[in-house]
Image 1 (cartoon, rainbow, N blue to C red):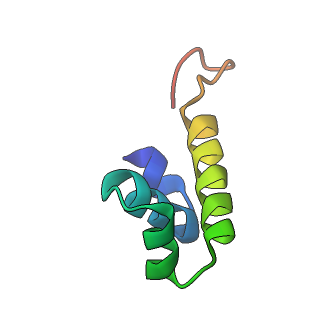
Image 2: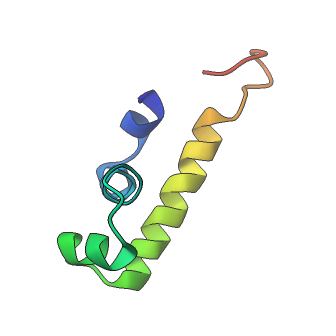
Length: 64
């Protein structure tokens, strides 16, 4: 949950709609009034940010 909360709103909402509510890309895009391409881009960026957030912190020897 902290990883999701760390995301900017525009990325958090696409992840919640796509992965939690299991809407299609088209449905997410329509709900947010954005293009399918913008939706795909936001999902890709959001997932990259989440991966970065969840990556172990080498300097502290563990996860955040």
